[in-house]
Image 1 (cartoon, rainbow, N blue to C red):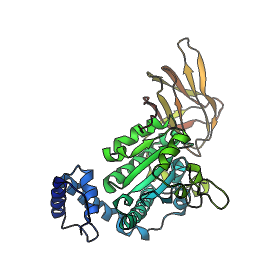
Image 2: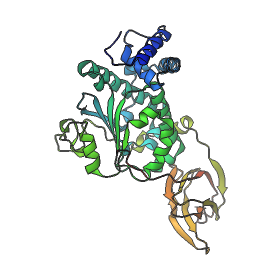
Image 3: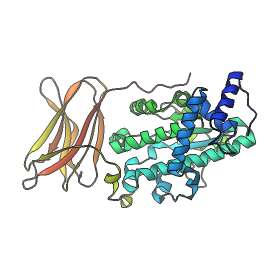
Image 4: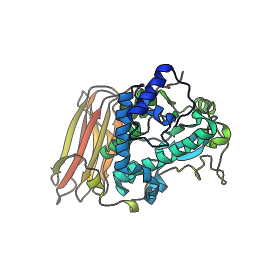
Length: 392
């Protein structure tokens, strides 16, 4: 099946060759527009595009992606996975809004398996892709891709310092890049805090050049990002919170009736199977009763990040971080206090304002009868550049 396309001669020849190479696996609905997604993703190299498409078709079989609509999404993902369709841009392309700060990945991974999270992403992507195809038939090829707004207002890097959370985000990026090429029309990342630069520096390693070229990042500067968004999206297709006119019947400017805002997953959803599904390597140590453990960590660059993730077996413990200056004076950066790390992992991050030695303290001196076993991961992460707008 062919569609009306404006292609250069070499691109048309590449398309013809690609179609011959994959003729044994394509379906009637795999038209030229579908095949071009894979060709563009591999810089018009038919052989590379063939390899990519065949791998993706195998992946679809493994995940049963063609029957994903029959998969019953866990209720916690339906209620707490932030995303939703706002409307359509000026070309008719779907506009998806993701209030990313509402993604409680820590809570979700304590409530469902990593596979459930990936399955949910597949289901959402398939639904949006089907909508894109419908819109493209009605309005032309410019309506066949998704316009996305990632709202980072309130974003906290803390939970992504927990290794399973970071890993699942990377898994999602890798899955998207390998199996949904060329479906992004434009992505606005707005209200990006300074700390977001570190997260994005890692994430972009798993994105191809095409995806990155479609991303515009804005700090918390509403006049600037609203102006950019409204160039592509009509006001009547956008929640009032983002410069549009849409609100809920109760006046909510975020249009929460259509855009799931996510939020903190209640602990009653948590299951005991989480650690089996998301194994993490920790260093184990026992702090004896009446004693304390100090781990000295040296940072050599201003702006480095010091992160921690630990749990205890059965009992609480006091925890804090001290900064040691050149004179030997110690200053509390994270106040030493009792934490219930036997109930939930204690996770956190601080920015180191200057090169120094920091003492990570596990204090069991208040306990005269119990030793405390700790499983910890302490990391120093080099600084990254501040977020800069990627718009001209």
